Each structure stands twice: as C-alpha cells, then as structure tokens.
Amino acid sequence: MNDKNTQENPFWQTKSLAEMTRPEWESLCDGCAKCCLNKFIDDEHTDEASELLPTDHINEGEQIFYSNIACHLLNEKSCQCSKYEQRTKLVPDCVRLTQENIDAVFFMPPSCTYRRLQEGRGMPSWHPLLHKGKKSAMHKAGMSVRGKIVKDNEVSIDNFEDHIVIWPLNDID
Image (cartoon, rainbow, N blue to C red):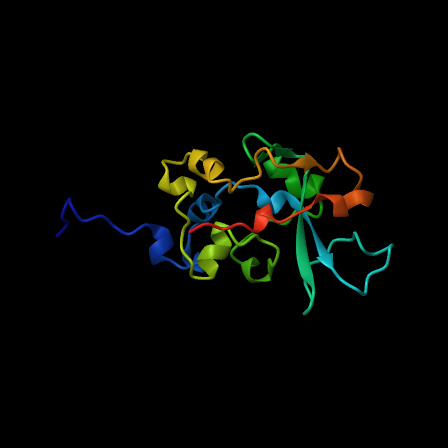
C-alpha cells in the first residue's frame, strides 16, 4: 500500500554506483568542472622530458597538485565542455569517468560527487540534483571553477608551477 506522504529515498541513497543506470550515473555529475583542471604529480623520478606527460596512476609517496589551468574546451560560465561528445577524441588525455573505472580514477577532487558516494560520504548539499537541476547553489558555495581559471591554450605550460592552487581541494558538508 502506497502512502502519499511516504517518499522514496533517492537512487543515490539506495543504489551503489555499480547498480545505477547510465542516466542515473550521468545525473550524479555535479558539473563543477574541477575534473577539467590540469593536475600535476610531484615525483622525484621524472626528468624534463617526462614531467608533463600524462599518467594513469599515482605511486606511493607522490602527491597530486591541482592548477587553475583548465581545458580549452571548457565553457567557464556553464562549467560544461563545449565539445562533450567529441572530447576524448579532441583531447586524448580526457578521461571518461565510468562505473568500470571509478576505482582507478585517483585524480577526482574530494568534492566530486562520484568520489563522495564511492567513499560513503553522501551527496553534498549544494548538488544540482537537490536544487531542481540548477547549479546556482554550487556556484554560490564556491564549489565550481567559475571565475577561477585560465585556459590551457592561453598560458605557457612551462610556467605551470605559477598556477598551482588549493581551492579545488575544498569540500563542504
């Protein structure tokens, strides 16, 4: 018997990430665009030729540093990729986060909803799913990249250390 006053728990509280449908999975993306930031790994074993090459792992003792340098395809105002469907072809280093690779994607920021749910920390209060699909609460909370970035085609990667920032590590509630 269904009671009108009884509401079902949202899917992110009742399903594991692996159990979610593709549309449910996609809706979890909070749209902050922190994943579009260039990140660097502090590694004593790299040389000039290898220090800016992409990697698919992090070794023990290494640390990830976030920069305010974002992919040139990112629309800073909407915090969305301007070429989302073609992004992995246009930017070969762009990683498509999936249910299959979430355990191996070590570079997601602490505020990432996928990471939060994977770690059992729940949905953040500013998430668009909790605000009728609107991103305004996220932007107001300072959890997106809006107003904080430069594009990778506008700066010299040789000076990447000048763009190291800590704000992508912020996570509230």
